[in-house]
Amino acid sequence: MGSTLYKKKAPLIIFLAPAFAFLLVFLYYPFIQNVINSVSQITGLGRPAEGLQSPWYANYAQLLADPKLHTALQNTLILIVCTVVFEVGIALVLALLVDSIEKGAQVFRTLYFFPIVISATALGLMFNLIFLYKGGMVNQLLLNLGLIQQAIDWKDSAHFLFTMFSPVMWQYVGFYFVILVTGLNNIPGDLYEAAALDGCDGLRRVRYISLPLLRNVLCTCLVLAITGALKVFDLPWVMFGAGMPQDQGWLTGTYMYDQTFNRGNVDYGSAIAMLIVVLGVILSNLANRVFRPREDIEF
Amino acid sequence: MNSKKMRLHPAALATYLVLIFWACTTVYPFLWVILNSFREKGRIRSDSFSIPLPGSGFTLDNYRTAMERFDFGSAYANSLIVSVTVTAAVVLIAGLAAYGLVRYRFRGRKLLYSLIMAGMMFPVFSTIIPVFRMEAAWHIASTGNRWLSLLSVILPQIAGNLCFAIIVLMGFIQSVPIDLEESAYLDGCNVFQVYFHIIVPTARSSFATVAIFSFLWSYNDLFTQNFFLRFPAEKTITLLLNEISSQAGVNYGLMAASVVIIVIPVLAVYIALQKNIIKGLTAGAIKG
Image (cartoon, rainbow over all chains, first blue to last red; front, side):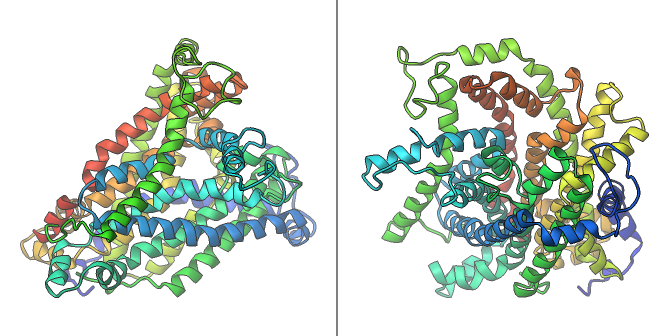
């Protein structure tokens, strides 16, 4: 970036000030409050703190000993792996395929967006009926095909992970798809034309042009996938509620919500929020290390 | 991209098969909701996957009941005021910040970037209580004044969408070729002209993408709205759906009809903005 255009730094203030003013007041300040809450003693929603915890790190010690939280962490880590592999993976394949066709690309772009448009309340209701024990779509289908002899309880401890994760992943493929397709569109067309003249086509075009130039956008997707998975709340909450089945179904997002808003453990909930942020920072730094975004990519 | 010709060989066929398969999975649930919105009360649980025909369960009652019992007009108005304001503010503010962070080299740049990353991890549940207290102290929240209440939702929603928007826009602006900006500068443009005349048009598909997601999250966000909007006149469309689902109980048909009514504006916005994501437009700008 040796441009002379950006040597004068004065305009930078105008570029950055509005964003950081907003973030400071409505994100960072409230979050500092959250840090303070996590070491205070708060017994109910909307109640003021009654002094510090004794010892001050009591909530964090509780984090280490809480078996439900361990379950939540375990489930969330599985979800992160699935998210990265399936959500971003499927979205990448679909984006590359849509990018390679001439006719109907616009139609697919619109259709793939549908799942994110419908609110989680509606989707949760729908998936509950799809996975219903008696007369649900999945069970009916499998029984009729003769693949199973007896209806499966999709929400029991053997199947709940699949039942919980597949709707979440299905819903967000469209999201990463839109981001990746936009990234592909930003690749100038003459590059492809030049490559085609050199006899570079099909898969080799993907390997040597699309993927390398998509690297930064893919990095962004990875970070979004990781932080998104740590915060996932609405669909699992609508489908499974508080930790079904038998406290095995917690995620970090649902567990934190339950502690804060249902049980009034505002201080402990704040400590869980801290854990979510710390994990998010560590994991997305890790992702950035591995798939380091490059700033030297130029067309 | 005239170089890419439709070739009718097996690879193209396979491509279409895969794409159509995924399209079925995304369209089917939507169809399912629409079909069940025309189904008679009480039949969804037992028979939710067939097509309701006149005489065997078809009815318009769900829409009639929804329209009679609930005030969709004012809820639409409130939702659109909130979401359009949030979207416009996010795109404007995030675009400027992303541009500054990508193109300028300065001390503290890494720190600001990490702050934005960290901001993306904050769960909204953890910031909402302090924000509510703060806005109550400023006499914005829970005043009973409709406009102030809407503002009290708009402000935290802007902040909540900013980090995501900045991160995504940074990724896209990074790939805008810097030579264009150089030559504009040599022609006598200042930085702001460069931003509005070069960056924004070149990356317009990226801006449209961010706008779509900001609109969608603001529109569908139940949690923040539920927290700040308490009076009937302030009700937004998501709150209305929530109210309907708690009142309707097992009347799934009524819920399905409400979902359809709620989804329509979002689809309209998406299709309107989607024109900007079409390829040729951006390719032309980069070549220019």
